[in-house]
Image (cartoon, rainbow over all chains, first blue to last red; front, side, top):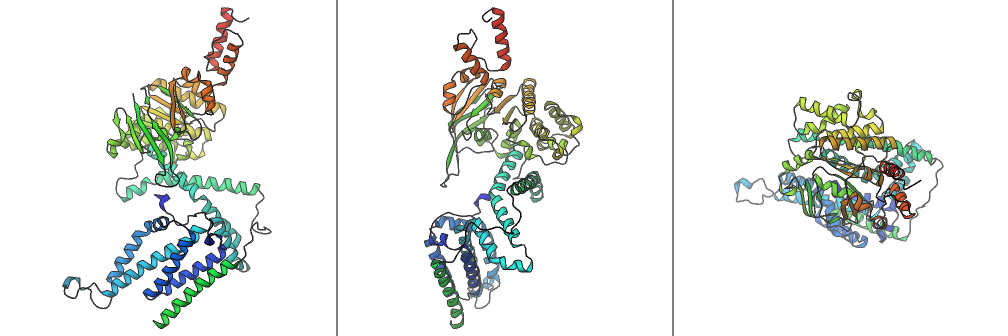
Length: 268
Length: 287
Protein backbone atom coordinates (compact mmCIF):
# COMPACT_ATOMS: atom_id res chain seq x y z
CA UNK A 1 0.00 0.00 0.00
CA UNK A 2 2.76 2.40 0.96
CA UNK A 3 4.52 1.52 -2.25
CA UNK A 4 1.55 2.72 -4.33
CA UNK A 5 2.26 6.36 -3.59
CA UNK A 6 4.19 7.65 -6.55
CA UNK A 7 4.60 11.28 -5.56
CA UNK A 8 8.26 11.95 -5.09
CA UNK A 9 9.30 9.02 -7.25
CA UNK A 10 11.97 9.42 -9.85
CA UNK A 11 11.77 7.79 -13.27
CA UNK A 12 15.18 7.77 -14.89
CA UNK A 13 15.24 8.86 -18.51
CA UNK A 14 17.11 11.07 -20.90
CA UNK A 15 14.42 13.34 -22.28
CA UNK A 16 14.92 17.09 -22.63
CA UNK A 17 12.94 17.56 -19.42
CA UNK A 18 15.24 15.16 -17.56
CA UNK A 19 18.26 17.08 -18.78
CA UNK A 20 16.95 20.48 -17.79
CA UNK A 21 18.68 22.37 -15.02
CA UNK A 22 16.89 21.32 -11.82
CA UNK A 23 16.92 24.91 -10.58
CA UNK A 24 14.96 25.98 -13.62
CA UNK A 25 12.55 23.11 -13.08
CA UNK A 26 11.84 24.25 -9.54
CA UNK A 27 11.36 27.86 -10.56
CA UNK A 28 9.08 26.93 -13.45
CA UNK A 29 7.07 24.60 -11.24
CA UNK A 30 6.43 27.51 -8.89
CA UNK A 31 5.40 29.68 -11.83
CA UNK A 32 3.12 26.87 -13.03
CA UNK A 33 1.45 26.64 -9.62
CA UNK A 34 0.98 30.40 -9.51
CA UNK A 35 -0.54 30.30 -12.99
CA UNK A 36 -2.95 27.55 -11.94
CA UNK A 37 -4.26 29.60 -9.07
CA UNK A 38 -4.76 32.63 -11.25
CA UNK A 39 -6.92 30.78 -13.73
CA UNK A 40 -10.48 32.12 -13.58
CA UNK A 41 -12.13 30.38 -16.52
CA UNK A 42 -11.83 27.20 -18.55
CA UNK A 43 -9.68 28.82 -21.23
CA UNK A 44 -6.92 29.12 -18.68
CA UNK A 45 -7.19 25.42 -17.84
CA UNK A 46 -7.04 24.59 -21.52
CA UNK A 47 -3.74 26.42 -21.68
CA UNK A 48 -2.18 24.91 -18.53
CA UNK A 49 -3.61 21.47 -19.36
CA UNK A 50 -2.14 21.76 -22.84
CA UNK A 51 1.24 22.64 -21.36
CA UNK A 52 1.02 19.61 -19.10
CA UNK A 53 0.19 17.27 -21.99
CA UNK A 54 3.18 18.60 -23.92
CA UNK A 55 5.38 17.94 -20.87
CA UNK A 56 4.01 14.38 -20.52
CA UNK A 57 4.71 13.69 -24.19
CA UNK A 58 8.23 15.09 -24.13
CA UNK A 59 9.27 13.42 -20.87
CA UNK A 60 8.10 9.95 -22.02
CA UNK A 61 6.75 9.08 -18.58
CA UNK A 62 4.05 6.41 -19.07
CA UNK A 63 0.55 7.85 -18.74
CA UNK A 64 -0.49 5.01 -16.41
CA UNK A 65 2.19 6.08 -13.96
CA UNK A 66 0.87 9.62 -14.05
CA UNK A 67 -2.69 8.41 -13.43
CA UNK A 68 -1.54 6.12 -10.63
CA UNK A 69 -0.09 9.14 -8.87
CA UNK A 70 -3.56 10.68 -8.67
CA UNK A 71 -5.19 7.55 -7.29
CA UNK A 72 -4.23 7.93 -3.60
CA UNK A 73 -5.60 11.48 -3.70
CA UNK A 74 -8.90 10.48 -5.24
CA UNK A 75 -10.61 10.78 -1.89
CA UNK A 76 -9.52 14.38 -1.35
CA UNK A 77 -10.56 15.28 -4.89
CA UNK A 78 -14.03 13.75 -4.52
CA UNK A 79 -14.39 15.30 -1.07
CA UNK A 80 -13.55 18.78 -2.35
CA UNK A 81 -15.85 18.45 -5.32
CA UNK A 82 -18.69 17.24 -3.11
CA UNK A 83 -18.59 20.24 -0.83
CA UNK A 84 -18.16 22.72 -3.63
CA UNK A 85 -21.39 21.53 -5.18
CA UNK A 86 -23.37 22.82 -2.17
CA UNK A 87 -21.93 26.32 -2.21
CA UNK A 88 -23.08 27.41 -5.61
CA UNK A 89 -24.91 30.47 -6.77
CA UNK A 90 -26.86 31.21 -9.91
CA UNK A 91 -29.63 29.35 -11.63
CA UNK A 92 -30.74 25.94 -10.29
CA UNK A 93 -29.92 22.95 -12.47
CA UNK A 94 -33.38 21.41 -12.16
CA UNK A 95 -35.82 24.33 -11.76
CA UNK A 96 -38.81 21.93 -11.83
CA UNK A 97 -37.72 19.53 -9.07
CA UNK A 98 -38.27 21.11 -5.68
CA UNK A 99 -35.95 19.09 -3.50
CA UNK A 100 -33.05 19.60 -5.89
CA UNK A 101 -33.35 23.39 -5.70
CA UNK A 102 -30.02 23.69 -3.90
CA UNK A 103 -28.16 22.30 -6.89
CA UNK A 104 -27.01 25.39 -8.80
CA UNK A 105 -24.99 25.70 -11.99
CA UNK A 106 -22.48 27.79 -10.09
CA UNK A 107 -21.87 24.91 -7.67
CA UNK A 108 -21.24 22.42 -10.44
CA UNK A 109 -18.91 24.90 -12.08
CA UNK A 110 -16.98 25.40 -8.84
CA UNK A 111 -16.72 21.66 -8.29
CA UNK A 112 -15.43 21.05 -11.80
CA UNK A 113 -13.00 23.94 -11.37
CA UNK A 114 -11.61 22.50 -8.15
CA UNK A 115 -11.21 19.01 -9.57
CA UNK A 116 -9.37 20.24 -12.64
CA UNK A 117 -7.21 22.52 -10.56
CA UNK A 118 -6.19 19.79 -8.09
CA UNK A 119 -5.50 17.24 -10.82
CA UNK A 120 -3.40 19.72 -12.81
CA UNK A 121 -1.62 20.79 -9.65
CA UNK A 122 -0.71 17.27 -8.56
CA UNK A 123 0.29 15.91 -11.93
CA UNK A 124 2.15 19.07 -12.86
CA UNK A 125 4.20 19.26 -9.70
CA UNK A 126 4.86 15.53 -9.62
CA UNK A 127 6.60 15.92 -12.97
CA UNK A 128 9.33 17.80 -11.23
CA UNK A 129 10.07 14.74 -9.07
CA UNK A 130 9.41 12.24 -11.87
CA UNK A 131 12.15 13.79 -13.98
CA UNK A 132 14.61 14.91 -11.30
CA UNK A 133 16.50 12.61 -8.97
CA UNK A 134 16.11 13.46 -5.28
CA UNK A 135 19.79 14.29 -5.02
CA UNK A 136 19.59 16.80 -7.86
CA UNK A 137 16.42 18.22 -6.42
CA UNK A 138 17.83 18.97 -3.01
CA UNK A 139 21.05 20.17 -4.59
CA UNK A 140 19.13 22.64 -6.70
CA UNK A 141 17.00 23.69 -3.76
CA UNK A 142 20.11 24.34 -1.74
CA UNK A 143 21.45 26.54 -4.51
CA UNK A 144 18.18 28.42 -4.87
CA UNK A 145 17.81 29.25 -1.21
CA UNK A 146 21.52 29.79 -0.62
CA UNK A 147 21.15 33.62 -0.50
CA UNK A 148 19.29 33.02 2.77
CA UNK A 149 22.55 32.09 4.46
CA UNK A 150 23.31 35.79 4.75
CA UNK A 151 20.49 35.99 7.26
CA UNK A 152 21.97 32.98 9.09
CA UNK A 153 19.68 30.29 7.70
CA UNK A 154 21.61 26.96 7.78
CA UNK A 155 21.00 26.31 4.09
CA UNK A 156 23.45 23.48 3.59
CA UNK A 157 22.29 21.65 6.70
CA UNK A 158 18.66 21.90 5.64
CA UNK A 159 19.47 20.54 2.21
CA UNK A 160 21.52 17.70 3.69
CA UNK A 161 18.67 16.82 6.02
CA UNK A 162 16.28 16.67 3.09
CA UNK A 163 18.64 14.49 1.06
CA UNK A 164 19.00 12.07 3.95
CA UNK A 165 15.26 11.99 4.59
CA UNK A 166 14.56 11.14 0.97
CA UNK A 167 17.33 8.60 0.84
CA UNK A 168 15.80 6.71 3.75
CA UNK A 169 12.20 6.55 2.56
CA UNK A 170 12.64 3.22 0.72
CA UNK A 171 14.80 1.83 3.51
CA UNK A 172 12.19 2.59 6.13
CA UNK A 173 9.39 1.28 3.92
CA UNK A 174 11.26 -2.01 3.69
CA UNK A 175 11.84 -2.03 7.39
CA UNK A 176 8.17 -1.35 8.13
CA UNK A 177 7.21 -4.33 6.05
CA UNK A 178 9.70 -6.57 7.83
CA UNK A 179 8.56 -5.52 11.29
CA UNK A 180 4.90 -5.85 10.32
CA UNK A 181 5.52 -9.40 9.16
CA UNK A 182 7.43 -10.24 12.31
CA UNK A 183 4.57 -9.00 14.51
CA UNK A 184 2.03 -10.73 12.32
CA UNK A 185 3.97 -13.94 12.90
CA UNK A 186 3.32 -13.40 16.60
CA UNK A 187 -0.39 -13.16 15.95
CA UNK A 188 -0.72 -9.37 15.83
CA UNK A 189 -3.89 -8.39 14.02
CA UNK A 190 -3.91 -5.06 12.20
CA UNK A 191 -7.06 -5.44 10.20
CA UNK A 192 -9.95 -6.04 12.54
CA UNK A 193 -11.51 -4.10 15.39
CA UNK A 194 -12.52 -0.47 15.77
CA UNK A 195 -10.30 2.48 15.08
CA UNK A 196 -8.85 2.69 18.61
CA UNK A 197 -7.97 -0.98 18.56
CA UNK A 198 -6.32 -0.60 15.20
CA UNK A 199 -4.35 2.44 16.29
CA UNK A 200 -3.16 0.52 19.32
CA UNK A 201 -2.18 -2.39 17.10
CA UNK A 202 0.32 -0.08 15.40
CA UNK A 203 2.41 0.34 18.54
CA UNK A 204 4.31 -2.94 17.99
CA UNK A 205 5.33 -1.58 14.58
CA UNK A 206 6.03 2.03 15.45
CA UNK A 207 8.32 1.46 18.42
CA UNK A 208 10.78 -0.88 16.66
CA UNK A 209 10.65 1.41 13.64
CA UNK A 210 11.56 4.50 15.65
CA UNK A 211 14.26 2.60 17.53
CA UNK A 212 15.77 1.44 14.27
CA UNK A 213 15.53 4.92 12.73
CA UNK A 214 17.58 6.28 15.62
CA UNK A 215 20.07 3.46 15.28
CA UNK A 216 20.45 4.18 11.58
CA UNK A 217 20.83 7.87 12.25
CA UNK A 218 23.66 7.20 14.65
CA UNK A 219 25.39 4.83 12.25
CA UNK A 220 25.01 7.30 9.42
CA UNK A 221 26.45 10.10 11.54
CA UNK A 222 29.45 7.92 12.34
CA UNK A 223 29.89 6.96 8.72
CA UNK A 224 29.76 10.60 7.66
CA UNK A 225 32.28 11.61 10.26
CA UNK A 226 34.59 8.81 9.15
CA UNK A 227 34.58 10.43 5.75
CA UNK A 228 35.44 13.77 7.27
CA UNK A 229 32.11 15.46 6.75
CA UNK A 230 32.02 18.66 8.74
CA UNK A 231 29.21 20.73 7.36
CA UNK A 232 28.92 22.86 4.27
CA UNK A 233 31.87 25.20 4.75
CA UNK A 234 34.52 24.76 2.15
CA UNK A 235 32.73 21.99 0.27
CA UNK A 236 33.09 22.16 -3.47
CA UNK A 237 30.79 20.64 -6.03
CA UNK A 238 31.25 17.78 -8.38
CA UNK A 239 28.46 18.96 -10.63
CA UNK A 240 28.17 22.61 -11.57
CA UNK A 241 24.80 23.58 -12.99
CA UNK A 242 24.43 26.16 -15.68
CA UNK A 243 21.42 27.27 -17.69
CA UNK A 244 21.51 26.23 -21.31
CA UNK A 245 19.36 26.98 -24.32
CA UNK A 246 16.72 24.39 -23.44
CA UNK A 247 16.27 25.99 -20.03
CA UNK A 248 15.65 29.37 -21.60
CA UNK A 249 13.20 27.88 -24.10
CA UNK A 250 11.31 26.13 -21.30
CA UNK A 251 11.25 29.33 -19.29
CA UNK A 252 9.94 31.23 -22.28
CA UNK A 253 7.10 28.72 -22.85
CA UNK A 254 6.00 28.62 -19.23
CA UNK A 255 6.17 32.39 -18.89
CA UNK A 256 4.17 32.73 -22.11
CA UNK A 257 1.45 30.55 -20.59
CA UNK A 258 1.59 32.60 -17.41
CA UNK A 259 1.22 35.91 -19.25
CA UNK A 260 -1.54 34.49 -21.47
CA UNK A 261 -3.54 33.54 -18.39
CA UNK A 262 -3.26 37.06 -17.04
CA UNK A 263 -4.34 38.42 -20.41
CA UNK A 264 -7.27 35.96 -20.55
CA UNK A 265 -8.32 37.07 -17.08
CA UNK A 266 -8.21 40.70 -18.14
CA UNK A 267 -9.89 40.42 -21.50
CA UNK A 268 -12.35 37.51 -21.32
CA UNK B 1 2.96 -34.43 7.03
CA UNK B 2 2.56 -31.24 8.99
CA UNK B 3 3.28 -28.82 6.15
CA UNK B 4 2.76 -29.56 2.49
CA UNK B 5 3.09 -27.29 -0.53
CA UNK B 6 1.67 -28.10 -3.94
CA UNK B 7 3.14 -26.38 -6.98
CA UNK B 8 3.75 -23.32 -4.87
CA UNK B 9 4.68 -20.34 -7.03
CA UNK B 10 5.27 -16.81 -5.85
CA UNK B 11 6.06 -13.76 -7.92
CA UNK B 12 7.10 -10.38 -6.63
CA UNK B 13 5.76 -7.26 -8.28
CA UNK B 14 3.23 -8.92 -10.57
CA UNK B 15 2.24 -6.56 -13.37
CA UNK B 16 5.23 -4.27 -13.01
CA UNK B 17 8.48 -4.26 -14.98
CA UNK B 18 10.17 -5.56 -11.84
CA UNK B 19 8.29 -8.88 -11.80
CA UNK B 20 10.44 -11.67 -10.41
CA UNK B 21 9.69 -15.29 -9.68
CA UNK B 22 10.84 -16.03 -6.15
CA UNK B 23 9.37 -19.53 -5.97
CA UNK B 24 8.69 -21.74 -8.92
CA UNK B 25 6.50 -24.82 -8.59
CA UNK B 26 7.75 -25.91 -5.21
CA UNK B 27 6.15 -29.10 -3.91
CA UNK B 28 7.49 -30.33 -0.61
CA UNK B 29 6.25 -32.13 2.45
CA UNK B 30 7.56 -31.58 5.96
CA UNK B 31 7.30 -34.62 8.21
CA UNK B 32 5.78 -34.10 11.67
CA UNK B 33 8.53 -33.97 14.31
CA UNK B 34 11.34 -33.64 11.81
CA UNK B 35 14.27 -31.23 12.07
CA UNK B 36 14.72 -29.83 8.60
CA UNK B 37 17.61 -27.70 7.42
CA UNK B 38 16.95 -25.33 4.53
CA UNK B 39 20.00 -24.31 2.54
CA UNK B 40 20.46 -22.32 -0.61
CA UNK B 41 22.31 -19.42 -2.11
CA UNK B 42 21.29 -15.86 -1.22
CA UNK B 43 18.16 -15.06 -3.22
CA UNK B 44 17.30 -18.70 -3.88
CA UNK B 45 13.87 -18.33 -2.28
CA UNK B 46 14.44 -19.71 1.22
CA UNK B 47 12.92 -16.79 3.07
CA UNK B 48 10.05 -16.48 0.61
CA UNK B 49 9.32 -20.18 1.07
CA UNK B 50 9.11 -20.04 4.85
CA UNK B 51 6.95 -16.90 4.76
CA UNK B 52 4.30 -19.04 3.07
CA UNK B 53 4.15 -21.54 5.92
CA UNK B 54 2.27 -19.17 8.22
CA UNK B 55 0.30 -17.24 5.62
CA UNK B 56 2.44 -14.07 5.69
CA UNK B 57 2.69 -14.29 1.91
CA UNK B 58 -0.11 -15.41 -0.36
CA UNK B 59 0.93 -17.78 -3.14
CA UNK B 60 0.61 -16.45 -6.68
CA UNK B 61 -0.50 -19.98 -7.53
CA UNK B 62 -0.39 -23.37 -5.84
CA UNK B 63 -1.42 -24.44 -2.38
CA UNK B 64 -0.03 -24.56 1.14
CA UNK B 65 -1.41 -27.05 3.65
CA UNK B 66 -0.71 -26.87 7.36
CA UNK B 67 -1.95 -29.85 9.36
CA UNK B 68 -3.98 -30.92 6.35
CA UNK B 69 -5.83 -27.61 6.00
CA UNK B 70 -5.48 -25.47 2.91
CA UNK B 71 -4.39 -22.09 4.28
CA UNK B 72 -5.98 -19.93 1.62
CA UNK B 73 -9.29 -21.77 1.61
CA UNK B 74 -9.84 -20.99 5.28
CA UNK B 75 -11.19 -17.69 6.59
CA UNK B 76 -8.96 -14.95 7.90
CA UNK B 77 -9.39 -15.84 11.56
CA UNK B 78 -8.25 -19.37 10.85
CA UNK B 79 -5.19 -18.04 9.09
CA UNK B 80 -4.25 -15.99 12.13
CA UNK B 81 -4.63 -19.18 14.18
CA UNK B 82 -2.13 -20.84 11.86
CA UNK B 83 0.45 -18.33 12.99
CA UNK B 84 0.26 -19.79 16.48
CA UNK B 85 0.74 -23.24 15.05
CA UNK B 86 3.68 -22.31 12.84
CA UNK B 87 5.98 -19.98 14.76
CA UNK B 88 8.20 -17.98 12.46
CA UNK B 89 11.39 -16.30 13.67
CA UNK B 90 12.63 -13.89 11.02
CA UNK B 91 16.20 -12.82 10.39
CA UNK B 92 17.54 -10.45 13.04
CA UNK B 93 14.41 -10.88 15.16
CA UNK B 94 15.76 -8.56 17.87
CA UNK B 95 14.62 -5.59 15.78
CA UNK B 96 11.00 -6.49 16.43
CA UNK B 97 11.19 -6.02 20.23
CA UNK B 98 8.95 -3.20 21.40
CA UNK B 99 7.56 -3.74 24.89
CA UNK B 100 8.76 -2.00 28.05
CA UNK B 101 9.91 -5.21 29.71
CA UNK B 102 11.30 -8.48 28.45
CA UNK B 103 8.40 -10.27 30.14
CA UNK B 104 5.78 -8.27 28.25
CA UNK B 105 7.57 -8.76 24.98
CA UNK B 106 7.68 -12.52 25.31
CA UNK B 107 4.03 -12.41 26.41
CA UNK B 108 2.94 -10.57 23.25
CA UNK B 109 2.34 -13.75 21.25
CA UNK B 110 0.49 -15.67 24.00
CA UNK B 111 -1.61 -12.54 24.67
CA UNK B 112 -2.65 -12.45 21.05
CA UNK B 113 -3.69 -16.07 21.42
CA UNK B 114 -6.17 -14.94 24.06
CA UNK B 115 -4.74 -17.02 26.92
CA UNK B 116 -5.40 -16.32 30.58
CA UNK B 117 -2.81 -14.40 32.63
CA UNK B 118 -1.84 -17.56 34.44
CA UNK B 119 -1.27 -19.47 31.21
CA UNK B 120 0.65 -16.55 29.77
CA UNK B 121 2.97 -16.49 32.77
CA UNK B 122 3.57 -20.19 32.49
CA UNK B 123 4.34 -19.87 28.78
CA UNK B 124 6.73 -16.99 29.33
CA UNK B 125 8.58 -18.93 32.02
CA UNK B 126 8.81 -21.99 29.81
CA UNK B 127 10.13 -20.01 26.85
CA UNK B 128 12.60 -18.11 29.02
CA UNK B 129 13.97 -21.38 30.25
CA UNK B 130 14.20 -22.86 26.77
CA UNK B 131 16.32 -20.02 25.42
CA UNK B 132 18.46 -20.03 28.56
CA UNK B 133 17.67 -16.50 29.61
CA UNK B 134 18.25 -15.60 33.25
CA UNK B 135 14.97 -14.75 35.06
CA UNK B 136 16.49 -11.53 36.38
CA UNK B 137 16.20 -10.04 32.90
CA UNK B 138 12.42 -10.44 32.75
CA UNK B 139 11.72 -7.07 34.35
CA UNK B 140 14.38 -5.23 32.36
CA UNK B 141 13.81 -3.25 29.19
CA UNK B 142 14.66 -5.36 26.14
CA UNK B 143 16.58 -2.39 24.74
CA UNK B 144 19.11 -2.59 27.58
CA UNK B 145 20.20 -6.13 26.74
CA UNK B 146 23.16 -7.23 24.66
CA UNK B 147 22.69 -8.38 21.09
CA UNK B 148 22.79 -12.07 21.93
CA UNK B 149 20.32 -11.69 24.77
CA UNK B 150 17.96 -9.66 22.60
CA UNK B 151 18.04 -12.47 20.08
CA UNK B 152 17.10 -14.93 22.80
CA UNK B 153 14.21 -12.76 23.92
CA UNK B 154 12.93 -12.54 20.36
CA UNK B 155 13.16 -16.30 19.87
CA UNK B 156 11.47 -16.87 23.23
CA UNK B 157 8.66 -14.59 22.04
CA UNK B 158 7.87 -17.10 19.33
CA UNK B 159 8.54 -20.22 21.41
CA UNK B 160 6.07 -18.91 24.02
CA UNK B 161 3.27 -19.55 21.56
CA UNK B 162 4.21 -23.26 21.75
CA UNK B 163 4.05 -23.66 17.99
CA UNK B 164 3.87 -27.17 16.59
CA UNK B 165 6.33 -26.03 13.96
CA UNK B 166 9.17 -23.65 14.74
CA UNK B 167 10.70 -21.97 11.72
CA UNK B 168 13.92 -20.00 12.15
CA UNK B 169 15.54 -17.87 9.49
CA UNK B 170 19.25 -17.78 10.31
CA UNK B 171 18.80 -17.53 14.05
CA UNK B 172 22.55 -17.45 14.63
CA UNK B 173 23.48 -14.79 12.06
CA UNK B 174 25.72 -12.10 13.45
CA UNK B 175 26.37 -13.81 16.77
CA UNK B 176 29.80 -14.75 18.08
CA UNK B 177 30.75 -18.46 17.95
CA UNK B 178 29.69 -19.10 21.51
CA UNK B 179 26.35 -17.32 21.11
CA UNK B 180 25.83 -19.26 17.92
CA UNK B 181 26.41 -22.67 19.50
CA UNK B 182 24.26 -21.79 22.50
CA UNK B 183 21.26 -20.64 20.48
CA UNK B 184 21.42 -23.70 18.26
CA UNK B 185 21.82 -26.02 21.25
CA UNK B 186 18.75 -24.40 22.83
CA UNK B 187 16.74 -24.90 19.70
CA UNK B 188 17.81 -28.52 19.52
CA UNK B 189 16.75 -29.00 23.12
CA UNK B 190 13.41 -27.41 22.38
CA UNK B 191 12.97 -29.76 19.44
CA UNK B 192 13.75 -32.83 21.51
CA UNK B 193 11.69 -31.91 24.54
CA UNK B 194 8.55 -30.65 22.85
CA UNK B 195 8.66 -33.10 19.94
CA UNK B 196 7.87 -30.17 17.68
CA UNK B 197 8.93 -29.81 14.09
CA UNK B 198 11.83 -27.41 13.48
CA UNK B 199 12.85 -25.77 10.21
CA UNK B 200 16.23 -24.08 10.23
CA UNK B 201 17.40 -21.80 7.46
CA UNK B 202 21.16 -21.45 7.58
CA UNK B 203 24.22 -20.72 5.50
CA UNK B 204 26.41 -22.82 7.71
CA UNK B 205 26.66 -26.40 6.54
CA UNK B 206 28.25 -27.29 9.87
CA UNK B 207 25.20 -26.04 11.78
CA UNK B 208 22.85 -27.89 9.46
CA UNK B 209 24.88 -31.12 9.70
CA UNK B 210 24.96 -30.90 13.46
CA UNK B 211 21.25 -30.32 13.91
CA UNK B 212 19.07 -31.36 11.02
CA UNK B 213 17.74 -34.79 10.08
CA UNK B 214 16.86 -33.86 6.54
CA UNK B 215 17.74 -31.03 4.20
CA UNK B 216 15.85 -28.97 1.64
CA UNK B 217 18.14 -27.45 -0.99
CA UNK B 218 16.77 -24.38 -2.74
CA UNK B 219 18.24 -23.16 -6.00
CA UNK B 220 16.96 -20.42 -8.27
CA UNK B 221 13.44 -20.38 -6.86
CA UNK B 222 13.13 -24.15 -7.07
CA UNK B 223 13.47 -26.97 -4.60
CA UNK B 224 16.42 -28.91 -5.94
CA UNK B 225 16.66 -31.63 -3.30
CA UNK B 226 14.76 -32.74 -0.26
CA UNK B 227 16.46 -35.71 1.34
CA UNK B 228 18.33 -36.90 4.40
CA UNK B 229 21.55 -35.18 5.47
CA UNK B 230 23.61 -38.09 4.17
CA UNK B 231 21.92 -38.16 0.77
CA UNK B 232 22.34 -34.42 0.30
CA UNK B 233 25.96 -34.14 1.38
CA UNK B 234 26.87 -37.14 -0.77
CA UNK B 235 26.18 -34.90 -3.74
CA UNK B 236 28.99 -32.52 -2.89
CA UNK B 237 29.71 -31.68 -6.51
CA UNK B 238 26.16 -30.66 -7.29
CA UNK B 239 26.09 -28.49 -4.20
CA UNK B 240 29.32 -26.80 -5.17
CA UNK B 241 27.92 -26.07 -8.60
CA UNK B 242 25.15 -23.96 -7.10
CA UNK B 243 27.49 -22.11 -4.77
CA UNK B 244 26.93 -24.25 -1.68
CA UNK B 245 29.30 -26.41 0.21
CA UNK B 246 29.57 -29.47 2.44
CA UNK B 247 30.86 -29.39 6.02
CA UNK B 248 34.65 -29.00 6.23
CA UNK B 249 35.01 -32.10 8.35
CA UNK B 250 33.25 -34.08 5.62
CA UNK B 251 35.80 -32.82 3.11
CA UNK B 252 38.60 -33.97 5.39
CA UNK B 253 37.15 -37.46 5.71
CA UNK B 254 36.45 -37.80 2.01
CA UNK B 255 40.12 -36.94 1.39
CA UNK B 256 41.29 -39.37 4.05
CA UNK B 257 39.13 -42.04 2.48
CA UNK B 258 40.62 -41.34 -0.93
CA UNK B 259 44.12 -41.55 0.51
CA UNK B 260 43.35 -45.12 1.45
CA UNK B 261 42.51 -44.80 5.13
CA UNK B 262 39.67 -47.04 6.12
CA UNK B 263 37.43 -44.25 7.42
CA UNK B 264 33.85 -43.63 6.43
CA UNK B 265 33.40 -40.64 4.09
CA UNK B 266 29.96 -39.96 5.60
CA UNK B 267 31.11 -37.89 8.54
CA UNK B 268 29.30 -34.59 9.04
CA UNK B 269 30.12 -33.38 12.53
CA UNK B 270 33.26 -33.08 14.60
CA UNK B 271 31.74 -35.40 17.21
CA UNK B 272 31.16 -38.11 14.60
CA UNK B 273 34.69 -37.57 13.36
CA UNK B 274 36.08 -38.12 16.84
CA UNK B 275 34.08 -41.34 17.23
CA UNK B 276 35.16 -42.55 13.81
CA UNK B 277 38.84 -41.94 14.55
CA UNK B 278 38.50 -43.70 17.91
CA UNK B 279 36.86 -46.62 16.18
CA UNK B 280 39.64 -46.82 13.61
CA UNK B 281 42.29 -46.77 16.30
CA UNK B 282 40.46 -49.45 18.24
CA UNK B 283 40.01 -51.64 15.19
CA UNK B 284 43.65 -51.20 14.33
CA UNK B 285 42.89 -49.70 10.91
CA UNK B 286 45.12 -46.76 11.65
CA UNK B 287 48.33 -46.81 13.64
